[in-house]
Length: 312
Image (cartoon, rainbow, N blue to C red):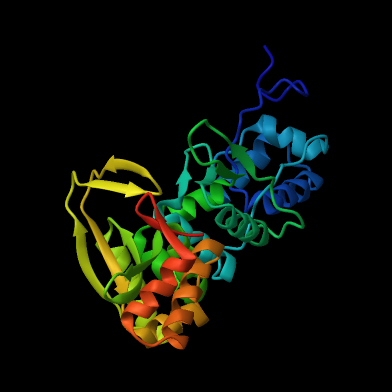
């Protein structure tokens, strides 16, 4: 009776989960071991023991023969970078979903946000062209812009403990904060008897907001306040769509005019409607005196739609 490995091609190839960052190195090692006379079984044993992973002889036979190389896509160096900081900020702002299959997906109503996230993903993976942005349209709803990438390596990184991710992202705080504010941030304007402007971000994770507050203060000298906004089960409306919140939410608010100007100049939004609203409000504060005149000027440029100010 023939044993496993007696007949070339007799091994069943498993779908080995090879860490993408190790694939090329493992393939090279397999070729070198084979050149020294080791067969697929011995090569599999040596590589599995050296790297604490499981590789089947069937996979190694194909690598040794050279008729099948490991396919490596969307691999990156897990080191601090502006692109990675932006992606972490967008992900932690609930703008991105992860799946066990290795899918990283952003699904948003702002096309600018989708483009910024898509560009960061392409940069992270050193790709010359980003993926195509998909669009889903439904009657009576805003179009949804969808960005999809498959990368088990990135999924594993984004599933790390929050403190680890904040430490990694804080090397490039501007990009992390822009991604976070693009996902969950807002520009709040009051235009009645008093004209008031605030910039903030809302999230259910108080620890995450504390980390963002620390970055604003230590990296940019921007003062902000953290407070609870809503209890669990509160009705919330976003761009005309209402729903009940499942958890309590908290707000990080920037209220001082100097701090808001600092935010606009050094961090800002990649989403054009938010950035334009911020610039317009700051412009009114700079060129017009008197609260009522400011409010009048604002209402000449903006009207409320679904509880939010929209450019006329």
